[in-house]
Length: 209
Image (tube, rainbow, N blue to C red):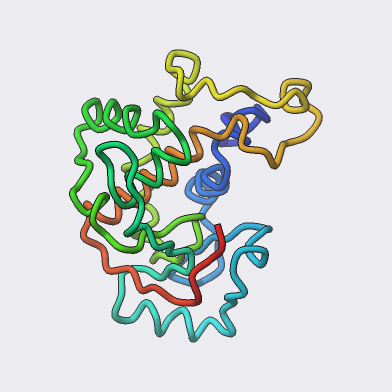
């Protein structure tokens, strides 16, 4: 009831995992844990990693700001003037770096050098954060995401065509169509944890993306 944005199937598709972020941010789970984490229904197709207990999560968070099992090596990526994670983003989603630059200027955040130089970056929303840091990320990111939703017909990059089944409100699609905002959100998380200088523990084998 307090997430009217998610009534629209096209918005749910565009937001990908961020739709769950939004719901759980506005409806905090009463689970008694001081952390929150996310994965996807296709995780085991990408990595065999599984936590074996809550103790393992608490131990990992003891000396780290977060835990991630979706780190991907980007050191060798190069695309035009971009290297590293920026090059990977631009190669996979042409036009995304120009759009991120628009957002960075409008919302006054930095696209840091580490976005081009870090050897590994965290993808796929496979992470656990303390709830206070999750709330901090949502406080920062939601105004940006809400602006993108309001202007998704104003920018070529966001006008990524929607699959017909979504236009017909039949079901969500597993294709890349209609998900460009989700790819922006994925990079916003990377930019946020880099700019916040968070220490994210890398666990599990590298996933197959």
